[in-house]
Image (tube, rainbow, N blue to C red; front, side, top):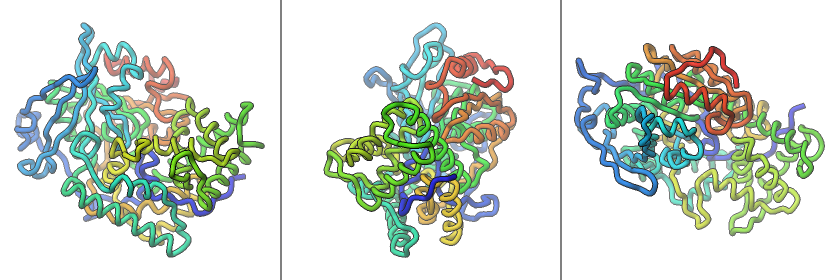
Length: 511
């Protein structure tokens, strides 16, 4: 029997809580005047797109930054008007001086809105020794993100309020409040970011990657992208198939889905991850969730409902609201090795009526520091990129139908992801269409899928591998989000052999 739906849990920033978009409905873009279709036109006899010679001709100046090297590149704000305003991309490099070096590997951690500069810093612990010897590992913050020319929408104090807010969408008052906050975000992004707000789409970011490929001195792009980074990589491959080197897309996004279906799949994925966590928790001796799995899930839902009525006190001056509790529960579900952290946080919240640990996890997810500042703009960038990539259509009646479907399919998380289209419905810029992504004529592209991935469900990886003309699938049988760097030697060997040597594993490899 499915667990019952918790009351009054709808989170305004669910799009930031999950890895991919939660804008409710996506148009048939070929017929929608609010969506612009774009692509590069190369000058005859040249791999440099016409009008971009100045950008492709610049030189990177690398300077020491701690144990790494940093540089900046300039790219056009609008690729359709390259003579206009330009923006800056921040890069970080972990260099190899090994004789086995083969070139540069560009990486992206996902998000959208996560910093690849941070992923470069994690590379020594996360990537294999052979990969680190073979490549200069290079990360760049995509346009709108982090240390690159960045999206700015709201103050830190306002972001605190928005992250804490829940809305009772069964009342007119709740819907009006949700609409008002959606418009506040959209207006704030337009005011704080200027023309950038219309140009942080994934197509533009993929075109930035080709500029970087050229500046790094590479004829072809070798790339490792996780989660949303798979959409970025697939978009690059479709725009520049002849420049594709060895591409690995781990934890794939399915670009063929409309936004509601993506949201529904994610909600179900996290519902299944919660059930897997509860079963694992109850198999131990110190689980606060009693009874069977259904009963344990219902207890989590009860906690969310209670925090909606009466937020829990914490060790700080901020209470744990239902929205924050949900974020705190979501974060450990991305990785089964952190489930024990969720157990401790739930025990504290349920048995001690103290929300401190769940609040800490929610803040960690949003990059909020203890002093009330945010160390990144990941939430704001997530809003902006998603609303350009997945513009909203439909109206309140459509969103109500979708909300019912979400609540029935995923009683714990579905309600929190409802009405996401309202934010993108207020967005002050047109969407940008990447089109069907086939990468026709490219070299082979590896797609890695994890069977128990809640954020990018396994069927998405299966689908992307099929959509890419030369895509092939590698499967990791396990729980958690993405596979390379957190799974097993089988995955590590397959990914590294393909990146370094171009070795395609046996068909249907399952690890």
